[in-house]
Image (cartoon, rainbow, N blue to C red; front, side, top):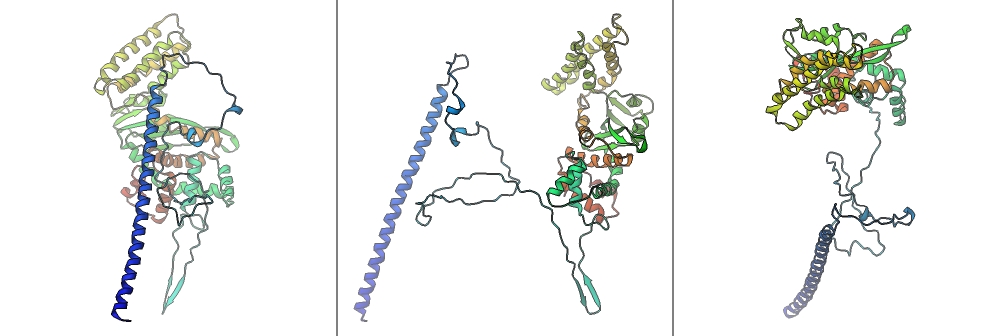
Length: 489
């Protein structure tokens, strides 16, 4: 082929490519115009929607206007609302950003749709939350053994919490969480596990919980020290039915101590006793700080010479409750109103005025209580006189609260966690023995401390049980860091 022919050939190729390029450029320009027109239409629709919305709000009837009566339409004649009409009542949906996400592209399913020809514009995210039932996995550690010359090498499986047991710390954490956080009796936990594909005998479940409590018992002295190191603690007690061998069932009492600063709680069970010695054995006589309690007589020891450095704080709710129970009495409502004023002062007044305003209410309260107490028409055994006597005995402890802005008006901070015992009392009915009640006290102490510190109970028990199983000896500081307020996974 000569040079002239080559030149002509290349000129022809260039002309064809130029024509193709021009065609593509024209197509792109047309599509850009279509896209701009579509965008303009969408913006215009959005403006119209905003105008309609403003117009609708302007024409809404005022609250003072009388609305016309419209006859109700029968449900069977009402048209079904469209998805847009249903809406969400203007409420904002909560977004859960801390869970696993699965993104799936959804293409149009119309018969005439062709993805290769279609031009992508934008996408719209539709969220559906999906629940996948939990799984139990048989984890097989195949420990391989090798020989190199005269030496042998073998892989080792992770340490199990208990000898001769195939259950790791995750199973133990699940049992404790279900039993002591969500209040499920052992029988229900067994049925739940059975639906997940594993049939654990009742004796095995009880045995695993018992061994877990024994392992976690190492933390109890450190939990007590952490609570008593706080200069402001709360005390309370409640009962639970306990089986006592051949003697049948009886009321066994759980005591509890709560650290105001660290949100750590410890339950104490000493053979179900409610005697004062349970309290005095726990709180040493050299304790220096404030102790908030109800008016139970055992706590009155704080006001004597045995605890010279301690100050007892009362509970306004317990005092007010005495009059709420008899509010049909004419003079009871006046006392209730005065107790409520303490709360209103803290809610509406600045903190620097709490003490001054509360002392005025305190003076009026004491005056009215004394008036009722001296009223000759009210007999000593009358319910109004009994409620008044209780509140007069608590006046000093209430005074100790209001002279400072650092103390709570009531003991609700510890009353709320005590509901877990009430839930157990209703769901599980009884503790099988004194030893079982003592285990319950230990596990509730750590479980509820986790809840008070916003710690995931499953993660906590799984990690701490495994840690205690792997480390037989630890320093006091290491043990202290395993308590819920300082624990880090």
